[in-house]
Each structure stands twice: as structure tokens, then as C-alpha cells.
Image (cartoon, rainbow, N blue to C red; front, side):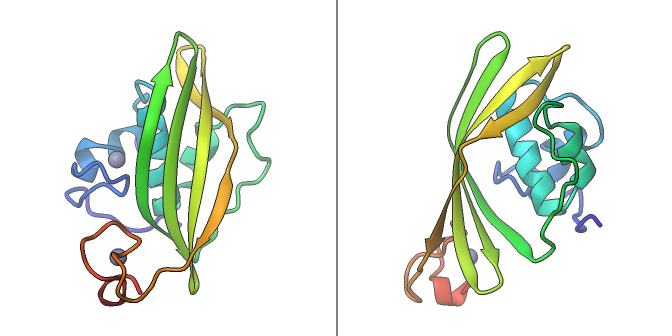
Amino acid sequence: MATDIQTSELCPCGSAERYQDCCQPYHQGQEAPGPEALMRSRYSAFALQLADYLAHTWHPQTRPQQLQLEADTEWLRLQVLSSSQDAERGQVRFIATFREGNEWLQLSENSQFLLLQGRWYYLDGDARFTTLKPGRNDACVCGSTKKFKKCCG
Ligand SMILES: [Zn+2]
Ligand SMILES: [Zn+2]
């Protein structure tokens, strides 16, 4: 089931745009114009539990048979480090921060994208997970300027 979001709220991908001006058009069927836009819209789809969109944008060769989204995963922050593309291939390096129960984790990945019949697809990536151990007085893992204990902690 999709997590509710108002179209006027900030987009989960962290672009500082409203959802309706950022990832929502892609979730509604518009083609993402390049690998970074697709990657951002897939991150937002994870945050909003849009499994169909994730399946739809996964390359047919690597698409999982069954896509299980963890209902208790809360996606907190996306940082796109770099992105590049040539005619038919793209790469996006990013860090995504999320919470699972009482654990805060970071996913670092260099994602590969392929253009197939005019549409970009996620191919695969070298996902690496790190457990975060934020101190209560540290800057919050979600990227806000608050202390961890006063924000997500
Ligand atoms: Zn977005
Ligand atoms: Zn926070």
C-alpha cells in the first residue's frame, strides 16, 4: 500500500521541490528523462512504497520476480554524489539513509542504468550497507540541522 503524501509536500527524494513538481509525474507514467531523475524517482517510490513503479523501472534482465518492500523501513535522506550518462548507459552514485526499527543504516551504491527502446531502466548496483551509530548530540542522520535526540532519535 502506498504511503500517503500530499502533492504539495516536499518530494521524498530531497530535491527541495514539491512532490507534484518532482517525482510524482514519473510515478504517474511520464518517462524519466535520464538516470538521475529515474534514480530519484525510484528512491521516492521506495519511500512511498510504490512497488509497481519499482518493478516497472527495473531492467527486465535483473527485475526480481517478487518485490518485497519492508513496511517498517523509513527512508530518511538521499544524497546523490555524482551521476553521468552516455548514449545508452548511466551511473548514479548515492547514499541513502534509512531507519529499520531502532537501527539507522546507510546504503551506498553505484547504480547502473540502461536505455532500452527509449526508456531508462535500473540495471543493478553494488549496494553496501553501513550501520550508523549516531550520538544523541550529533547532527541528525536525516540531514536536518537539529541534534539527533531532538529529531529522528
Ligand atoms: Zn523527487
Ligand atoms: Zn532527523
